[in-house]
Amino acid sequence: MAALSQTPAAAGGASRLLDRLSGSNLLALAVLLVVALLALMPGFTGLPPMDRDEPRFAQASKQMLESGDFVSIRFQDEARLKKPVGIYWLQTAAVAIGEQLGVPEARRTIWLYRIPSLIAAIGAVLLTWWTAIALAGRRAALLAGLMMAGCLLLGVEARLAKTDASQLLTVMAMVGVLARFFMASRRGETPPAGMVLPAVFWIGMAASILIKGPIGALLVALTIAGTVAATRDWRWLKHLRWGWGLLFTLVLVSPWFIAIMIETKGAFLQESVGKDMLNKVAGAQESHGGWPGTYLAVFWGTFWPFAPLAVLAAPWVWHQRRMPAVIFLLAWLVPFWLVFEFFPTKLPHYVLPVYPAIAILIAAAVCEDGLAIRLWARIVAGIIPLLALVLAVAAIGGVWFYQKEIAWLALPFAILAVAAAFLSWKWLGEKRAGEAVLACLATSLLLYWGIYAGAIPKLQAMAISPRLVAAAQMPSCSHVAAASVGFREPSLVFLAGTDLDMPSPEGAADFLGQGACRAAFVDKNFEPAFQARLASNGTKAELVSRVAGININGGKKLDIGVYRSP
Image 1 (cartoon, rainbow, N blue to C red):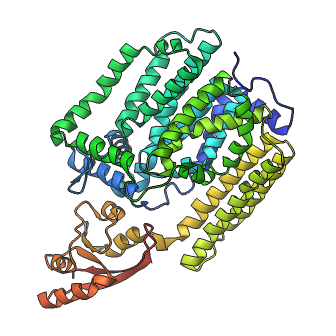
Image 2 (image 1 turned 120 degrees about the vertical axis):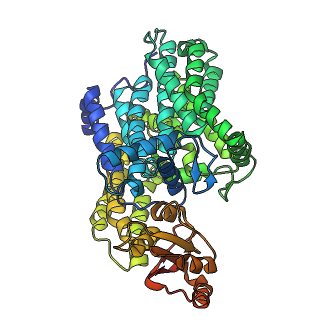
Image 3 (image 1 turned 90 degrees about the vertical axis):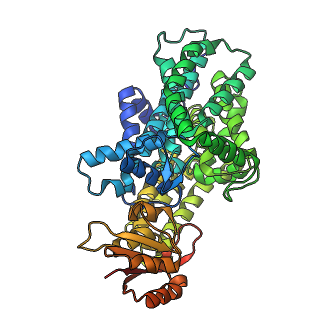
């Protein structure tokens, strides 16, 4: 049986353009690469370390470079045993290359640690296209890849030095292979012989385990189980070469797991599985709880601006639910989504691995003229311009609220983005679905440039750690040892140095008295005790600056004095 969307939809400007662009694999890849770069590059190098997860990952990677120990994972003196080592190896490699290329202060340059996430996000866009070709045809594959490039959540993860974009890349490698074997089986064809596709699958499995433990394997298992249950056919799975593949995966992942178990005397397994994973299943961890349905609620924002299109495509998907490609896509999407909906711990990025399935379903519906256009559909589609307006106002209003400045650079991008979103809504009502999807993409690109390049750089009130470290610098000191009282964010550890002390107010006063080239960051609430200890010790300290702003975690107002030893 042929894949979906092999028959061209009604001719139109967008259809003809997509046909031309998707007719050549090389051209389609080039388009996706350019669009992904346009979507993901704004703000990539300019964003400060984003507390709290990103600088925790980056600092642990930095400490690997400092210590030369690439087995243990540590944040200062604390062992980080929640995640495997894969992302840290990727980040240390990126920073080491940056050092070799002469990047100044490479180990304190956060965008170097983000490079694996950026590359993985681009790779996930390309692999969405590759997977969709087997399921929905070339034009739908190009549309699905473009939607993933413009997806808000993937754009966020591409700009953060953490695991989720890299995890998505490994998942897409595995699912793309499964899709090819399954669709070949349903068409009665023999899949390509050789070891290339099985090797891609099992390398993806090993990388997934080393980056985020069993999550990728869980998605693959649920996808296989759902597909087999719906079709009563498991024979296509034999092409994965299970015996060879499992052994190959074990060879790739076991050396580090054995080394870390020896290093921690078994504590890694107890911490990562016994505490981190089981706690997320048993209850809301770190205040990240939510009721079932939370992911469905936040989906409108995390898959913006394409989320309303998923609702418009839902009737078509239901009618096509017995088509092999739709069976596979729903088996990929529904079980994994439901599992995480019923886990008490909720974070938006947990369901990112199924967003490409949603993009492919939307793209297939678009190419089959399957999007609903009734009154209810037009009302739902109105969320596209509505959220564009909300995001634009929030970005420009946020700069004014916190900085009392107008984000002039963001303003034209915001206006154009809202106009493109309105056009998308209008074209959906006129059955010009292809043009509507491209207008949605233009909306996301314009707004990302406005927000990441125009608005966020203005929000210096949020950049507490970079301003503290800059204020503490002394021309005569190659390294300033620092202590912080009342401000304990991981971004400060990353920027100020692994030796950052976090003492009591009295301890900070004692710290300044221990020598030159020292600085103390003291929150206003702790300054009376700090200054009293300085006076009792007879220690001289110079107040060189005050850093005021908003802690991005919790929105607490901060007023921190920067004191230096003479």
